[in-house]
Length: 213
Image 1 (spheres, rainbow, N blue to C red):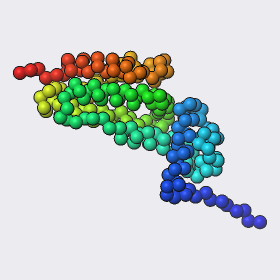
Image 2 (tube, one colour; image 1 turned 90 degrees about the horizontal axis):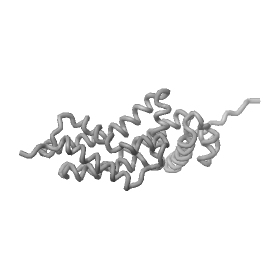
Image 3 (tube, rainbow, N blue to C red; image 1 turned 180 degrees about the horizontal axis):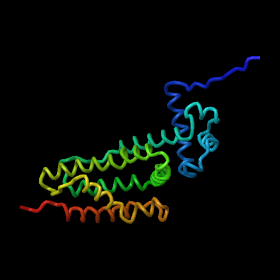
Image 4 (cartoon, rainbow, N blue to C red; image 1 turned 45 degrees about the vertical axis):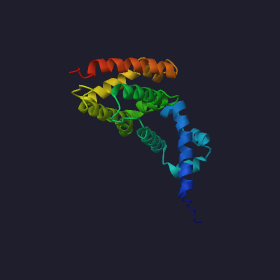
């Protein structure tokens, strides 16, 4: 008697895309709740509402599934639209950017995503590097380009705009992001974010505003 081999082939088109997103959404919840090591393919299949067989049709293993989730997270973050109109004055733009940035990185599931990537980055360095480049460094580069435009306009006096961009982003996180990401405090309110960002903008401009001629 000849044994029959069954090959599972993923469907194509919109149905395929919808199923992949369904699986990734379920897996993301499991990874956020249990971490990478605590998550199992059985648990992911239950959370996604699919059979374990269907799960393996789309993703060969837990590593591939996690990489796909981080990839999607990175691309979604990279598409966030901050208003870096080079014609807008620095104070207006810095305050608006700071508030929008903190609302993204301190959203209810944002810290969990960072924690999960940090926990696995040593074991999967390519995942950590991609997340850093497409999320953190990407935002930093956008801000640095805006600061360069304001230097050229004569409003700011900055020798190293990449360094200044990193400094401002860290200042906006002060007292908010680390307590949140380490679960010492809940996500900050809009009011708390505004207080910290306004202070960061004042300090930043005090150090980098071009002297009046």
